[in-house]
Image 1 (cartoon, rainbow, N blue to C red):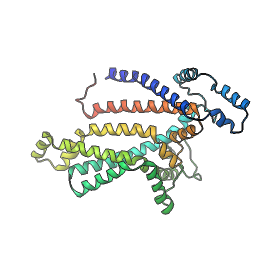
Image 2: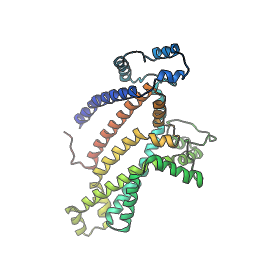
Image 3: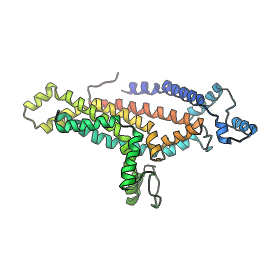
Image 4: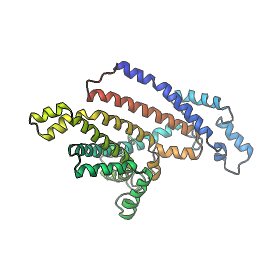
Length: 334
């Protein structure tokens, strides 16, 4: 097991190197000059030249990449061209916002998706089965940005039940400790802040978690149907065990392997790809930071975010593989 983990960690090197080359190449192929963006449309040639020299944009691309790579290996992604702050500092300050949104979205997706899949499989071809799978098909087909806008219009504008942007009411005093507002509210005993941050979290989490929820429900149903046809399930039923015990104690655990795979992949994708949701709901996370960086041609910020996302995605996949062993002890990594 230790050898497998070490091997997977060593595989991070070529993966992150490839991601860095891809990110560097694509951002430099994009039209536009970051120096002119910073200086403004009517800036003089001398001003633009000074900005290019300051940020090393006058050097050959290979030289720029090599300088940036050496800094990245030390955990320094350089300074943002727009804000002049360290990119790593700006990413880490926004990452708790994205992490909290992703965790809450996955909590909704796993809870609803797994239960819907189990119920659909245990009552195959019933109205509940058709209903859940119809909703799942609708959820998979739904664009995230459109769903987000519809949720804002219905629950935020027409009904006025929930806020449509931000993380917490600005009038509520709040002490930030970990950056996870729900957790910080519990730690400090600030229940007004807890309720406010929870209300701000519901709509973006529903928009972000709809596709994973639908995917998890469909995979859980398929996996459960396959397990329910196995001989050991027939044996358990022949012993006279209650149907609920057969399903929830014996069938569910054996059906979890593909479900865990989907959960791990979706968690990594959400954590590194909540760009549309954060943009629609003005959520101050890393995804929105990337969008602003691309618009401003902020090369160091975009490159640093892509490399950070690639690292997160690979680590989540490794954790998912390790969880397999605890679900099914028969799995061994050599």
